[in-house]
Structures are given as C-alpha cells and as structure tokens.
Length: 158
Image (cartoon, rainbow, N blue to C red):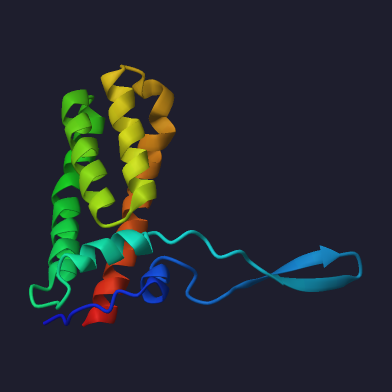
C-alpha cells in the first residue's frame, strides 16, 4: 500500500529532473574540461503536484497515489487507441484521445505532454494534422517520459 506523499517543492521538483548531475566533456583543443549539464525541466510540475496534494492535506484519501494510478490506467487504455486511430486515419478517435490525455496529463502536472496533446487536438480540429506529424511521432516518447516519472514518484511514496 502506498503512503501519503510528502509534497514539498524540493521533493516534487526532482520528479523527472536529472537523477544526478551528469557531466559532459567539452573538447577544448588539447585539454578537455567537464561541464555540468543543465537540469532539464521536471516532467511533472512540482506546483501542480503540491496543489493536488493540498486537496488531501492529511493524506487519508491517498489522493495523489490514486490520481497517478488512474493516469497510468488511462494511458494503458488510450495509447493503443491512439495508435490504432492513427494507423486507420480515424481523426475523430485520435482527437478524442488527445483531448482526454491533454486534460489528464495537466491534472498531474505533465504540462509538456498536455501542450503536445493540445497541439494535436487543435491540428485535427483545424484539419492541419499533416503539419503536426512530428507531434504525433513525439506522443509515444512523451507518454513514456511521464509514465517513468509517475512510476518513480509512486515508488518514492511506497
């Protein structure tokens, strides 16, 4: 059973951020210097997670865990639908999946995924989907990134 998360901006801010600061080697002639990589933006917005946690201040309802598990379940159902809709050219089904994912990803603070889904949904509505094939191609990777961050957060709360 999962325990109540401790939503602090510091803890939540680490979700999806670099696990440890990596270093890259920058060639500089004969000598090479190591420079830290910039930390990427968190996959899950810490402020959104804090707001969600605020709805269950005592943690008695295990709200964050339930919402994150519901997101995982939703993605498991919607991803195959999106793939089938894209393969068959069913724009209405693809738009519905994008709309659903847009809302559910925003609710857990996965703002990049939500914005990607919004672009896809808008492109379908405006019938400019061909201009956004790259967005459709990126959807799977974006879903994977969010699911990975969700899994890490759930494990941290266990």
